[in-house]
Amino acid sequence: MEQLSPRVIWLWRFGSLIRTLLFWTPIAAFAGVGVAGLGGTAAGVLVAGGPLALVLLMGLAWPSLSWRHFGFALREHDLLVQRGVLYRRRTSIPVSRIQHVETRQGPLERMLGLSRVLVFTASGFSAEGSIPGLDTPRAEALRDTLARRGEDDGV
Image 1: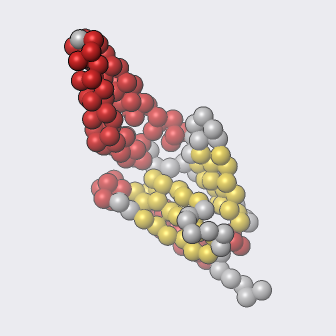
Image 2: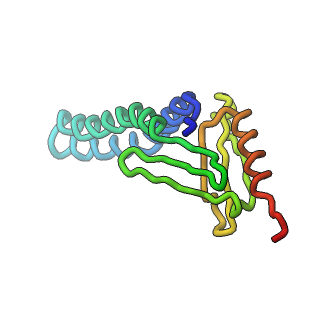
């Protein structure tokens, strides 16, 4: 099984930090102010700070665990994608079912030299398989290989 680039850990951590600042911090502040009005400043700080500290800690630790448990393998007849820390998921995508393959980069991925590969099959509108955090040259090579293998043979 191939692993993702270790730089994806920093990408995921930064995404977690942004979510914490934009989503969890206002919720924690609102809850803390509400509790402080009822039970005092110390209770408000505890209600706001405790969960926020836990979210920040998980945002720092979880990406490393996710990276450790994510892998993929391009085999003869399928692409195998494995992920999950608590709940493990293994997806086998038959090469004969692949319709098209894309690489994508957001601004942070571009800064880190990373890309993600999205594999689409005939079964749906969204990507059947996604491999984030690959070095851009590796992502492009995987995209091209999958596109060549998935070509229709006319049968």
